[in-house]
Image (cartoon, rainbow, N blue to C red; front, side, top):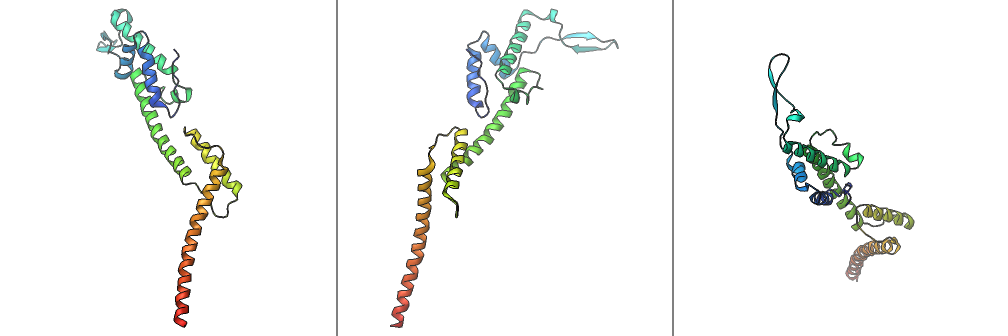
Length: 203
């Protein structure tokens, strides 16, 4: 089973797949706990500095218990697997984080923010498609090219729309012209009635 690779705009799905991937690995539950809650703090020994003061120092490996060594190994493995699931451009945004949990949390913040912006972009493109119409004085070919660009943008966002715009564009133009015709006819009808009334008054 391969490590799922994260793509922009698909963080929510990737997050579930990655945690499912960890679950089936050896010590999977421990790795998930290390990622989501952080590793258990290792024991710290007191050392005396040259100045004679006692300070907390990183634990000496030979003094770690078997359980602590296992915890550290699991955390490092979880971090390694997480990094392998990230493309370089995403990892470079969060590689300054030291712990596995900090790396996971930073990734969450980055990707959630990107997804919210992506949702707004998708909504804007979908609105452009739904309200698409020919502009006044525009050549039919230019209208088709604009429509194809909208379709292409929709596909990038995961929407599936018609690749052959001629009929659809023609229909949109027809509807637009029909609406304009109705407005003109309504205005003309009003004008005719006024003319008839004026004629009656003259008679």
